[in-house]
Image 1 (cartoon, rainbow, N blue to C red):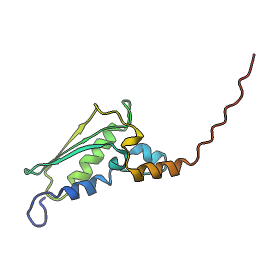
Image 2 (image 1 turned 180 degrees about the horizontal axis):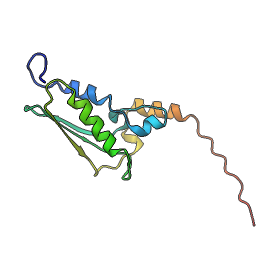
Image 3 (image 1 turned 135 degrees about the vertical axis):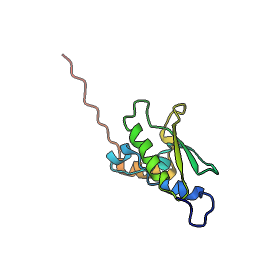
Image 4 (image 1 turned 90 degrees about the vertical axis):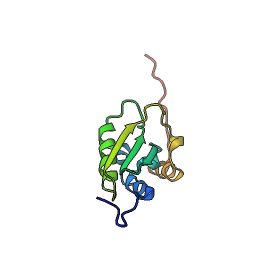
Length: 126
């Protein structure tokens, strides 16, 4: 598959494809957020030979959705015109925190969570 004009792979097309890769935990929370919105996308490189390399992180070291996220990246980026191969790598060095999220992602997540009202029950004595 090659781009319609026979040119190089457009980085904007790769980023648009990655917007469709949703973080499974955000789906469970009822607020679908992309890898970018979650702050999980660590790097994208488009090479002249039709190869796109994507580096991403996860929200925690025990993430059970790692394989699903990787497959989502492979499927989405692999469908971009001109992409011949997708290389996916996990960035295990960076530790995720909410500050890495996009401002819109943080806003949407906060709105979905609603106000937090924690009432502590009085301790019982025995």
